[in-house]
Image 1 (cartoon, each protein chain N blue to C red):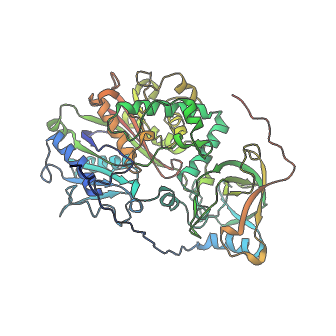
Image 2: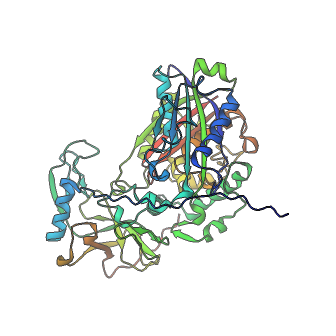
Image 3: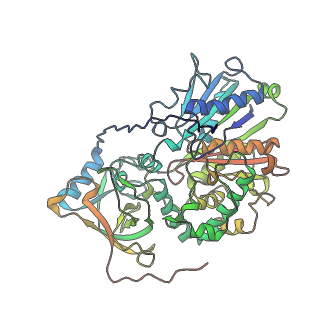
Length: 168
Length: 381
């Protein structure tokens, strides 16, 4: 008699826990400036002068309270990037981002830290590189809602060509 | 350290993509019952504290240890949980023994990655206001780190691929490994693109499994085993949570954690003193990056160091003779598996993957994306 495969029972379950996260004082100012005025505000440490975006209450290196606000331009330099082939989920919609798409990190001019976002560029290694000059593209004012999605994406400044790759 | 703490026993389940034949308590018990058998210790009488290590979101349950207090000997007794990498549980366990409060501590890490989706779970590690909604996970963050490291130090995809080739070949000698085999650099480079520069074989696969380990004070250790493995030094350090605060090619947290561990162990020149390393190669390039952060080779040199064969079993500094995380070790369990493998090497019990004449080993674990939290353990026999 043929032996039947041993059966193991597992129970499928989705644990769906709703949250509502307070943005807090610093991010509320940052997000309302973005929503209402289309401006990017960071904080500058009174001691080490690092310009930190997203703004936060304490400078991690000096452990002093950040109180000085600095407006940043919308242009900067791409510090790193990846072309994603995974359909990662957008947790605000529960729907996947359609691959391939590009994630990148831009250092806005004058900032110490770097902002991660989608890069609106062809997912092609010849069209995106570390050091590429970029700018932020915001939603039109009437469509802004006061979260990170008010920045739609990072896009390359026009008229640039990828430099020759370094070999070691 | 004035008082000494020893690892007196180690046991591991086999790691597999999916263990549908056991629930997490049964899986944990496989490792726990084996380590008790190996050491001849019994619960509850011989062990006065227990620490488990997993993570609520992986387990789908708050609090991840509440369903396993029975198997770990925590019933009507103390049981603590470490919701970080398993290497940090060793740190915590050693602190408990050094305090004089405990003399023998059972540490067990467990996770079943198969029961959920790593990308969704890992997305919750990111700040909910300014990063999470991008959909980031550990793989996409690691891709950014890999790109930055390659850009800044001239590391190539081939350099990283050699780590995969070495580790998956080492894993053939490890009966616990979830995946192993003979691969070429070309196989790694041509495996499907996931998040370039990371391709499928550059990424540690999902796995289920558990590791148990027993720590004891010097007095207890001498009675339990004639092959104690001493914790000579141990250090931990955090870097920034927000990725954009870091140059991802830097390894400041690891350098500091390693510096503390080496200082405690009285090691001035780790390149001369360390005989083997088990490091957290969650992604191929990380083995290179962490070797540099551990001070075991110069910055930007780990690619050449690996290509020279120095990190192979039989090389100058064998790295991940077990096959490392690339051979499939669950999240949270990863660092305890590094410590356990290093301890097996120093006890001369590493079977076919045994490195000859090893007296000092370094084990490194990390928690969070791009190695935010680092823990370094220096072991000696």
